[in-house]
Length: 269
Image 1 (cartoon, rainbow, N blue to C red):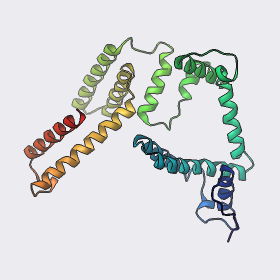
Image 2: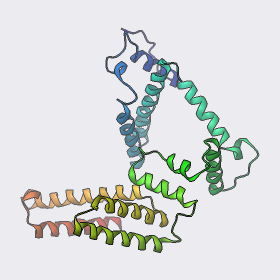
Image 3: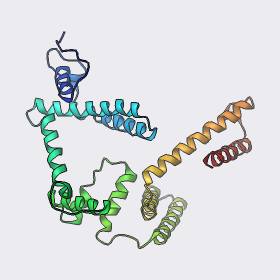
Image 4: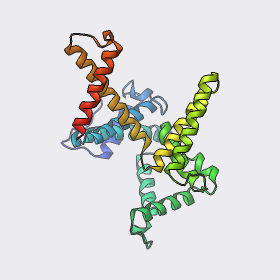
């Protein structure tokens, strides 16, 4: 048994120590001490999305808990590197503090930035200078490939726009989307290049979303949630008629769907 002081309230440094004890080669937890950056990569993603859900639910208590889970992931990754003598939790904190001071010269220096737009513009310029992103290639390739596809597309499009690769308005972006849809239809008819053309359609849709000031990742997430709610509503309507959803006719399914959409519109106001 590992000795550890029990407290009413713990700190970040207590977390660092607990994680180190969990990964102790002799007395640590069998699961914790076997983990690697790669083995818990998915955990980091899951915990982050659970924190986002707490934000979407406006649940402060749940957010507090989920942020703790995210912080645990940070502490675990730091401990893995500390064991190799590369970096630790304190050096990570040191790095982000220095970055925040450097990228906020309007707060910690003499630069003037009176609006959010000026702040973001300065931030991007400082970030590019800091990381020596002086070419289109360096700026585009710095967008993480691990981003969700829609988010990555929007980020790449925005950065490419600085070099002239952008439509003048939403109407032009919509025309491009319609053109890509036509090419997808041709691919479907020929049975060749369907994935390629589908990708172009999705990419064009993200571009249109940007021109409209919309977040495509968020828009698709909400559309998926609406679809889910409608399917559940259809199942409930079928159950009210004494039927399982998979047993109803296409005509009945269409009727349920229209009711679900109407209910949705009514609740939306």
